Length: 433
Image 1 (cartoon, rainbow, N blue to C red):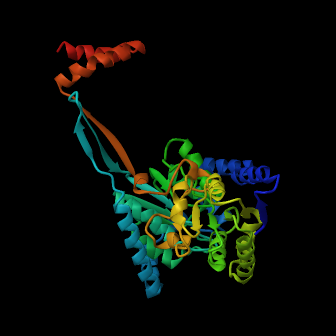
Image 2 (cartoon, rainbow, N blue to C red):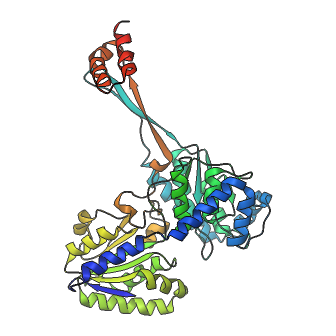
Image 3 (cartoon, helix red, strand yellow):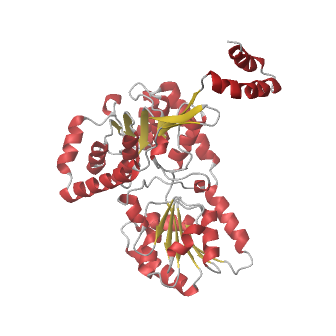
């Protein structure tokens, strides 16, 4: 691990606060770059989209080739190995089953004054989902975004994913077809977010955008949401994060590999080990060094550790949980003797994994809950992607004359107090009818 912090040190609090602030800062140049890309897409549509695809993804392509064709889907189906296809099917079914339990219900009731109240819900009409590409393929992200949307009843699902050589990973396309994605475009980055938000000559705009991505993608989602034309869940689904809380009973190789797992995604994430045992800290960090040296994605892991890898030695379990809540990580692993005892202390986390046999990687692929989770501290005010993200709740209010006669005077009194005479008159007119 790159940095070790000891709670017993006199400068612990200052160093801890400083490193959290550093990780959560958004570079002004990134904000400005994204703002410029979005403005270009709004102004010139496909022309800007193709230019940025050529510049950032090193892909020169015509507008009529942005969409993945039926023939490409068919070719992908024929090139995927049976065991991978079977694993996708199992993951799909588990994700669907979990999210069906989240479906909201219409509700109507009459209160003591005879006013009938309730709510109904309807699905968002169109959704865009971002699937990262580049150094790795993420068919799991296709399922984790698209399946909850389908469960909610979304009519049109659009997927974008960068394809530097023009070809998307076949397993990503198979996952898209399995999940019911309607349109797939080989574009990525902030320009893809802008295209889905504002539309171009080739891509019709969507109503909501979901999916994880790098800092440019996440900031682009925030900026288009601020414009008010598209919805974006409040969670900042950015670079991967994990906090592993371990005690003396945690197997060193289990804890070490789980710190490495999220660092494997590359730079700008967080990979923390938190423990109250100096012996465990030494064992696990030594194992992290050994496993990192052997890892196929060693460069990505080391790049992440250099900026976001920490080992924190605290006074006890309660202090470990306090550190975790301040970090508000995407993934939190409780690798302790009694993780259920610590679970009630969790206030800020995207997902919690309890015990040595519940690695976050199970949640990344097949557990069932969506792996699209809040990062960059946004777990303090938001949660995992759910069916709710694809639904609108509509209030229903119904009164007959007797009910209005009971509540109407109060409405009129409040309206007059606020100086809104027409509001009050809407009640008075009905009282005389």
